[in-house]
Image 1 (cartoon, one colour):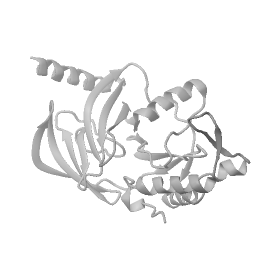
Image 2 (cartoon, helix red, strand yellow; image 1 turned 90 degrees about the vertical axis):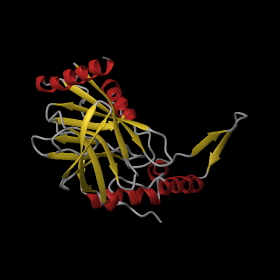
Image 3 (cartoon, one colour; image 1 turned 90 degrees about the horizontal axis):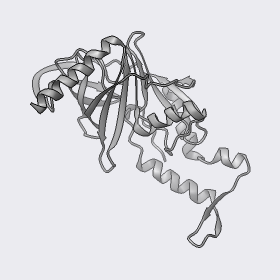
Image 4 (cartoon, helix red, strand yellow; image 1 turned 30 degrees about the horizontal axis):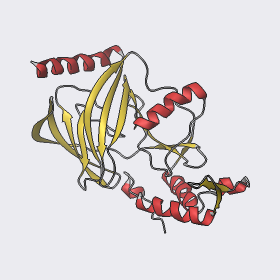
Length: 264
């Protein structure tokens, strides 16, 4: 009886898409050697925004205070916009030091192969499909009972929304954990940015890696930290740069593997 009530609730939520209400799909992302993260896919009609839980909160706060700041020391954000009417998909990137916003037009086609294999995942009757994107092969399981052609990040175009998505190397594993309905437009007013291509994106990453504190040094600022005794100590930009470069190398596993920058 409990499962039947849950199934009816899911059907009720999904049916509201036709009335242009906002539907939110919450995905759990598991990656090797990292803490589980939660991502939100906010769908309104044929448009959607996909971003992390922290980025979604930051967007909401930015509407109030007019200021947005990235908390990640890297460029890599799984943040995207889809407009399935105009067939436009953009990856959103925020500069980790300058907070400048950039958009990359995703023009790589998703050529899906739908397989006969089916399985039940939670309350969803799913079917298997595979595709290639970003230099990786992906396996998706989509719901066969609802025609919404949505999914995590830039993925879309299947005859049902994606419940589970994993690359064959298991570097990225998305699992749908919740669907909810809202009377509000949770996509928010997305701030304006500059459209760039992949080569420009790579150049921005290389420049940041080479001198991540260039903007701070240009302003004449010095880096200071406090010790456990309350004393203020000067920090060397050279040491800080070395530490950050090491972190950038360790976390350099972009979802678009074919656009990866090899930091040296």
